[in-house]
Length: 111
Image 1 (cartoon, rainbow, N blue to C red):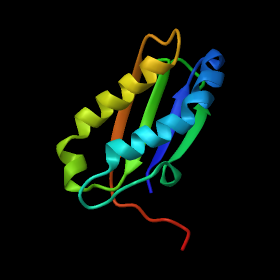
Image 2: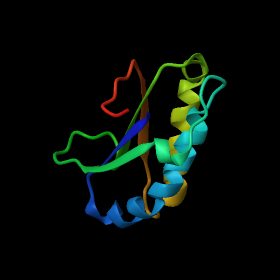
Image 3: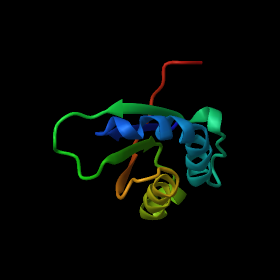
Image 4: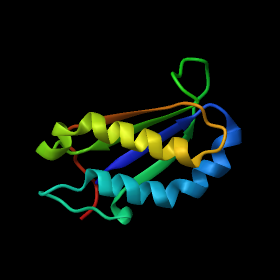
């Protein structure tokens, strides 16, 4: 199932990021749904991770990990732009965000 690692380098965004997490899970599920698989928000993991140092490209960055279905591959840039805009529209004062979609084979540890 997809996982989103959401990195932030300013604690002032934490409360807003926590607040939008349920909607973000639904949005990512919708963005990643394709002919081969239909996802719901309960199938998307979102992790908020503080990032230290000065190496980030934006105040908030998202790594989205998912399986490489053809429809996702064909619209990977669109998905990233949509998720980026979703976050920018909902986090007050956030001027930039970056999103990456990493499509690869996935294993998991549950039945």
